[in-house]
Image (cartoon, rainbow, N blue to C red):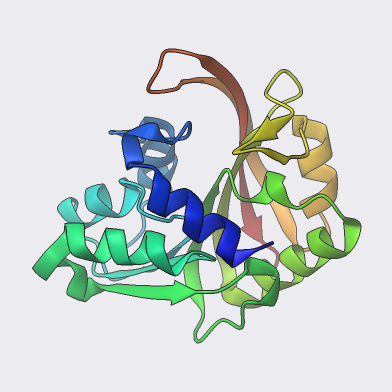
Amino acid sequence: MNNTYWDNVYLEKSEEDMSWFQEHPVKSLEMIKELGLSKSGSIIDIGGGDSRLVDHLLTEGFEDLSVLDISEVSLKKLKNRLLGAGNKVAYLVSDVTEFRPPKLYDLWHDRATFHFLTSIDQINKYLETANAALKPGGNLIISTFSKDGPEKCSGLPIHQYSESELKELFQHYFTNTRCFEDTHVTPWGKTQSFVYCGFKKKV
């Protein structure tokens, strides 16, 4: 993926102009709550940019948060918004397929990044990185466009997924715990179909 492309997207648009914007990321927060993680547990949000998930996790008392994004501009926006609260957040600038995890995490969360990876090489690198980044028994939450979702996002082609396709891709390293479909409403009222899946790293 191209960091210049995404830097320009974040320079040109406010967060409310992004199709994926959620003031309250309900489904992600519900899935995280169900895991019963310790407040000291380490969570990394993949492709999080300046999304609001980290705000809610800080409010709920989580103390070890990381946000990874290919766009340095997006992370600067996030850091500026969080101000003092952001000292509990590590801001990691990297393409996820080239990411070298600095530590092991209890939870890997990805809403709407994985579907931008359209080659099998990129997908395999992602899976290997996610596996390497998680502690034994660690959890992974992933959300992508479903088969009824858009074919492009921010002008780029994406890969739509079904529940069965996600389960098949992740089964080498992970055990599936649940999957469901959900409808996201963009800031301008358009609906987009997503599929969410939860996984646990095999021990």
